[in-house]
Image (cartoon, rainbow, N blue to C red):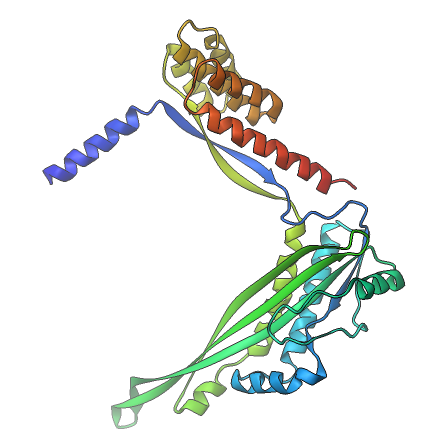
Length: 345
């Protein structure tokens, strides 16, 4: 107990002696996939259907993994619909069209095939009047069933008797893979795979009954497949994250007062006190103040000013946090340039 008390006291002392506090800032990140603002009309095709010459292999796979003949086809179409619906909802493109009549095949079930040739991509885009092509290149459902016999107490008119209940567990993995083709630049803008697991359970007096108790599996697979299409659409959408920044709260009375102002949300009031300390005769205090001015500039969205203050804190006063912070700010500025390009209409 004495040792634990000593550790707690030391931890509290170290915390109370910290010269910085944390502030949380929401930062918008560019979408993982950048598409030219010139691309207004897009088409979606399903290329995951297995070519006839490879169907024997695919049929064997379906038998071994307990798949129905048409489940992959229907689920793949659900994925295409999910992507189309989400792209339309997000208003990124003028027109989004799923081309169900285009018959494209894959020669490698369950894997990413070689990319479509540019002749094929250009022909589809030209005939369908679209600027880019989204392609579902891979779709596969893989299921594994396991059984277990569990001792149970069975109620009968004569009382409880020991018995065995059979449990069936099915794990289904839905695998999808997408590509985006830009025919003008002859560039594959993205290649991305998504896998999601679904678990089903059933109970019965024997293994057959237990397996038969696994219900609604088809509907669940279709729902998950549709969700994978929606999730893929999010790769084109900028998103927000929460980041932390250290700011100095100790050094002079002004820092102590500014800390209290910051804690109540009065950041402008805190900044007025920090700015006074940027002219301090103490290099340590001036460096901390310059660093904190960079923080308030970032909070206000003034990244160029934030970089200037952070550079001054490091270059003039050798502040220990400022160099790392300069690099963070420059990275944010570069990301903002990408964001502006992505959000051009």
